Amino acid sequence: MNFVDAVEHYTTYLLKMSFLYVRDRQLAEDIVQEVFVKLYQKYGEQLPLENPKGYLVQMTVNRCRDYFRSWHYRKVQAIDFFTAHEKADHPPSEDSDIAEHVIKLPLKYREVVILHYFDEQGTAQIAALLNIPIGTVKTRLQKARRLLKGILLEEGGGSYGQQA
Image (cartoon, rainbow, N blue to C red):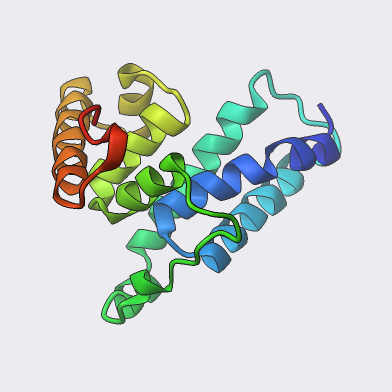
């Protein structure tokens, strides 16, 4: 696969994933751009990768996690930037409602939900990616489901409230 094809094929996917992590559209765009710049610097036009999607997901997750460890995040954290969540130009769907609730979860639960449901990774893959035990991944997924169910039931949850 060449670099241009990778950018065209994976940008939207990585933007969605990054946004679910950092909750800020501009920051998500910056992270994805940074990921592609680093990819180009490392490999150039031709990407000798067997699994470019997996590699790009790993880079994006790592960059998002780096952001949360940064001085800038700790400074901005004091400001309630979570209210700046932009609504899409189309009417909300059940999926976007659920995504809004996932965004409200604490990071350690949000990241396992994103990786498990959005990126469709298994618990072993998530454990390796986050460098935590498989049991911890399972526990966090279970806790995240309980938290989401509570949020959905509290807000009236709609038809999917009982499935969380």
